[in-house]
Amino acid sequence: NAGVTQTPKFRILKIGQSMTLQCTQDMNHNYMYWYRQDPGMGLKLIYYSVGAGITDKGEVPNGYNVSRSTTEDFPLRLELAAPSQTSVYFCATLQGNLGYTFGSGTRLTVV
Amino acid sequence: AQRVTQPEKLLSVFKGAPVELKCNYSYSGSPELFWYVQYSRQRLQLLLRHISRESIKGFTADLNKGETSFHLKKPFAQEEDSAMYYCALSGRFSGGYNKLIFGAGTRLAVHP
Image (cartoon, rainbow over all chains, first blue to last red; front, side, top):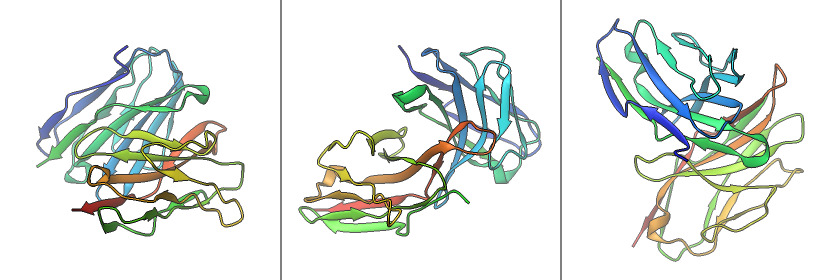
């Protein structure tokens, strides 16, 4: 099993550009999460999903959108990139008492 | 409000010294607490969860509900322990779904 796979690993965007951060899991976990990690701030929850077709906002959803058309995929969309979205983004899954599994992260810089 | 507090941004010790990384939480229900570790530019890895009551890499953590704390301890720090450590709380929040919320993290630097 690959676990949780995130692509791309790195990306530089110009202000106003859009992009999609991909997250795929092969563990058939229902719960999926997107976090952003900023220095000194820990990880903040952006969006989460409890299953295909169901998504909800986390603590810092502004400027982002998500969709969950399949159990495996949970892409995060940035429509109009801003410098404040420069961060490292982590995708994670949860299944019952098995705990959370994190992807390796996407480092995004908006210039 | 649900919150995880890690009061120290940086903890600097010498090899062989004891280590205690502090974590306090605020949660109205029955919490499930974790410690995650992140080595330089790598993904977060689960270090400990309070329900397992195990010791990983010499680290232990005990849940103290009276003090709402879940401090991480190791009697003798090693250089390879240098990393970022996050305390996290899992519970059912608004909407009834499980979420994981994190503290701001503590960077542990172990010097030779």
